Every structure is written in C-alpha cells, then in structure tokens.
Length: 453
Image (tube, rainbow, N blue to C red; front, side, top):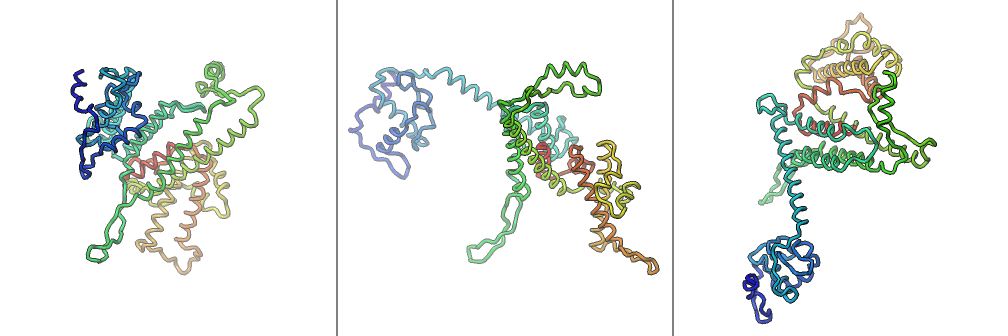
C-alpha cells in the first residue's frame, strides 16, 4: 500500500495530463513510450521479476529496457508505465521479494564462474609478467618465451592425456579456447607503421606513418585458428563409431606380455568388431585421416617458415664453427662432395641406426648450411673476396660455385631427412632461437603452430 500511495500521482488518467518533452534532451514522449512498451514482447522474460500470475513485482532497477529513455532521469518510467498498465489485474498486490530462487542461484553461479575466470586470468598474466620467476627477481625469462611456454603448458594440460579418438570434454574445450584467447590477446595490438600520404588543410600533400596489422600475424594467425578448429571438429565427430577402446583388458594383457611387447601396455587398446569395420566407416576414417594429415602439413609449414625468419642468437653464431667442413665432419663431408649421387643414396650411405643419429646429422647439416650462407653473403658484399687460383693450377670451379653446390646438396639432404623422420624433436638451432628469442609475435606463432602437430 505504501508503494501504491507513492505512485498515486502516476496512476491518474493520462488524458488529463499534457506534458511536452524537449526533443533535444532525447526524452521519449508518451506516444513513443507506449509504442515502445507495446512492442516489447519479452519484457516479462527479460526483467526476471514477474510472478507466475502475471503481476509484476519488481522492475525498477532494470537497465535492459527496450526504451532508449533508460539512460536519463526518466529511465525507470517505462517500468512504472508497465505497472500502471497491469494495475487492474494486480490491484493492491505488491511483492518486491518474489524473484524466483532458481534465478538467484543461476546468477550466483554465473557470477562465481566469472569471478573464477578473472582470478585465473590474473594468475596467468602475473606469472607471465614475472617471467615464470615467482620470487620476482632477475631470473625470469623474457615475455616472448613466457608466452611460448604458456601456450605449450596449456596444450599439455588439455591434450596431454588424450589417447582416444573421442570428443573432447566440454570443460577442456572451453578451457582451451578461453585461455588461448588470453595468450593470443597481445597479437591484437601488434601493428607496424607504414608510410602513407594525406592531404593537409592547406592543400599540400603530407607523408605520414599509419599503423597496419603486422604482416606475419595477419597471415598466419587466422590460418592457425582455422587448423585448431578443424582438429577440435574432427574429435567432436568421433561419435557413434564402430570401434571402441578396452582399457582394463589391454592393461591386463600388457602385464602378461613380454618386456619387448609391453612398452605401452597402459595405453587404451582400440577394438573393432570381429567382421571388421563397415565400408562407410572405413571411408569416413580414411577421409578424416587425410584431413588431419593436411592439417599437420600446414601447421608444420607455418612452423618452419616462422623458425626460418627468426634470427640465430649472436652467442650461438660465435660458438658455431666458421667452416662448413668442420661442422659436417669427415664422413658427412665426403658424402656431400661425392659426384652424381642423389639425396636418397646419401641417406643410405649415412647408415642411420636411430632417430638420435638422424637428429645429430640434421644438426650438423644446419650448422654447415649457416656457415656457407654467411660466407656467400660476405663474398657478395665484398667483405671476403674470393682468392684467385695460381695460373699453373687448373681449377674449373671457383670457390664460390663450390660452396653454392655444397649448399644446395646439403639443403636437399636436410629436407629428405626431415621428411623421413617427421617426429624428431627440435634441432639445436631451433631450440636456441626460441630460448633467446625476443620477438613476441614470432614465438607466439611458433608455439601455436607447434601444438597443432
């Protein structure tokens, strides 16, 4: 009744009232306000304060009204007008504490979830700013390396224990997308200044520097996001499959097997029907396998391209041998200098017995390639002129041509080794580029492309 008396001035007949509102103050007139209310079909649902019998209980504090007058002094007038329209139905029933308890619980849960996300984001970025040194001292890593490590750690926590072809749980999926958005947020502010021309007020042409999205971020980041979504969609499509996994059985069998056959007995073992997979299921899995392989190739190509653009640290440059022959060693150098030999034959001559020996050969080749490129660049700039041979010595191939030929062979052999051993860990030069890298954009792209394959 108290609220009724307070609103008595508003419940008199509107025909007796004649008020003009100033249009410059952008306040809606009665006719416009009534149209706004009549067109608001979802008011009861949006306010969250209507009772089951149609009587409005509380809508004074709502800012989501469909009327544009909610931002001025008459902001709550639309709510009062709706109350007057329903005055005949509700009579003297005014209950301001009738909000359903369920909506309170839902709002509280949403608030707690949002509050938890904010705390998680604060914790992550605090560790990034500290350079992973929780003491706050001078032992922290650079911001670029901290972001790279953050992306790798997030991928390990979300996909590290994924041993089955099945949809990713919603909790992990939302965590991956949410926290990746946080870690990729610095790329939204990466720009490069490019020259542009602008007409001045006096008619003269001025040359100014305008911001433009960084080229490598603009080109590679959307592609990586697309590859990321394709991988998630492929996992989500693994429903109603004809195969399944037997965890307990595989572990029990693994304990009874010999040591050579039970290296990974703890992993789930895929099982298929006795008659095998149907033709439709087989084609579907083959198609998805081809899609994932294309994703792998695209992500690996982006990763290699980014690593190629990253400079080798100065300390590593000074530590590497200046001669390509010294980097290769006698055996590998003889194979490269042999005439009329293909890359496949060179791999056979290397006699690689393990992936470790293959990685060692790749490290030697990369060091030699770097040394030869440095020599060729110096000779092209005139810093280290090629020595002329003595007149009585026959040397049909100059020193520069010989280096270029060896460089070409080494690059071919390097590509063949990487294609034959695609699952090798990163090479020595790649690790040092990441460890000493200062470019935030390069390390974000490198880490994001690395987790995709």
